[in-house]
Length: 122
Image (tube, rainbow, N blue to C red; front, side, top):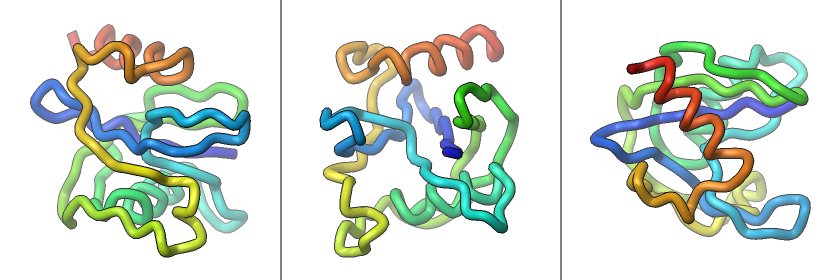
């Protein structure tokens, strides 16, 4: 099971560039595996901190499908930092704020989540 955060500020979304199991390199929302002792919300907060350096607060449950939970969140502290010397970050290449208009960075997994967010927040 996976838990991930959708964090949007100033028409930009926080994303991580990473290698994925299917062998591709993609831009994805920060997040990762839910540990045995965690709720999806706790995993989302922990994984976002590990991958980006940011402390977050969950604002709203957005979507769940195929054992993947997505939460809208906001940054409440920390600084953007990628520590890929840690084993759990070995698949990460970069972290960036991606313009919401930068459509070529979004794929069949991320674009529908952003579209759902836009429908809810209008």
